[in-house]
Image (tube, rainbow, N blue to C red; front, side):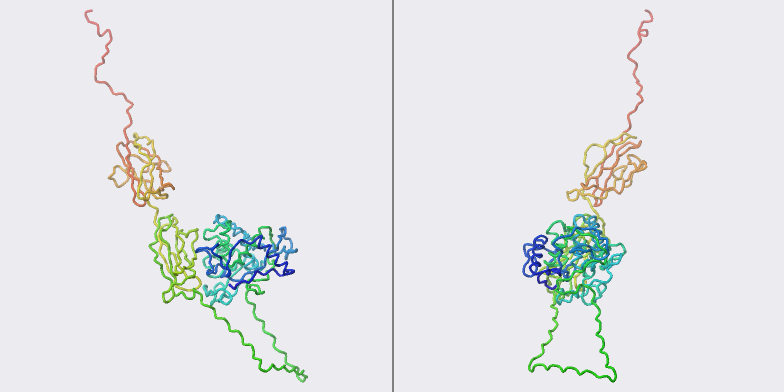
Length: 587
């Protein structure tokens, strides 16, 4: 992006002194504290490591130019507009946001609050970026569904005064098959839109020219990397990642704070368009206007007299003509020198569901001579039917290569879906063959099962066991949750099939079952089995619990016969005799 020499004030400033005072006041009250060196780069005091934005990263917009107009020093009291056209009053129209555009910002922030609550994205930040990038979609010139009436295109990014980004979309979005251009009300470059694009108005497509789609995409872009925008440091990183310029950061922060103090809705198409841009041109960002040919000279009337032309003043002798300035040749960027990408020693990528992959993906950018290329961007994208993510919950990450030409992707975290998927590494800004990495997610597993109690499990026939069986699953000594388990009741330890009599569980309808599947340990690795019952069969039986990973536990169950309620007759004579029987017959 062309260097922005000083921040230019709004048109209409009365004097240079007043303008200077306005900038000073805004800078003091609204702008964040950012330390920069002479080349507009962040200093070591505010340094950021990959994959945070760096000066080599063109960000969301390719570091395209932006509007530098600042908001009024005093926000008006926001009131709903009831008239068509700009709201009267100094600065009031600047505080107003076109209805459809405002709705898009607020809807995007609401969706991000639900999907990424930790980001704390304010809609005023989206509004500030929309103001700075396109003047709120050129004053709200959008259709009912949020699509701009005409495309909003940034300048050709051919390296002359701007970033040098060769075509990445074959002209599909920006109409340029040679170089990229920023597109739409939020000014995404095609290579960024390819992964950041979202369908914000539920019409089945992601269109960078639609303010609903662009606002939602911008929200997700600002909320990546686990950034919390309520934290000052993360807010700075997010804004700088959108367009890497300290002036851009100050301008966006100024508008964000202005909107926070008060704004209101105005009719679509009635907003005012800013007048000043960071590339010091007065022409607002728009499609190039067709050149109107000059009218051909009218022929003189036949027979008429013509006025003799005034003879030209002869040039001074010896004065050479001023030669035309040659068109500067774009300086090759590091991206232009990359011939291929190589795997940088990535190990086998495998992890259990829910775990973080031990190894990280490394990709090296090299020239045709095999030399490493530093400061180029590698985008890593997760491809396939998987819920695995990078740290921060994203399915993509862009990382700048280091001095050895290596970009190290953020750590991968496995989801709950098992199976294989692919992580694809692509060079940003140039068509170079991608490098694919196979990753595998295996089921959660346990290598040991133990009972949490040691009481003997006994029951009388026809009764219920007093204690329920609880087991604990561990892997390498640590409790492991969400491990699948199966419980089976067997006639003996040698049996391979479930018993047809003896202890049993009950299903939902109360019928006896002797095999339970679909069991799962909790977060602490514990699994408590349902209550056990016994039929009229007595003896010793076995409960076997098995888990994914091969851990097995066998528990003995004893069923005894119930106590008899009928008294047992005695075989010995009664010791007591009646007095009559004991008398002698002769008495």
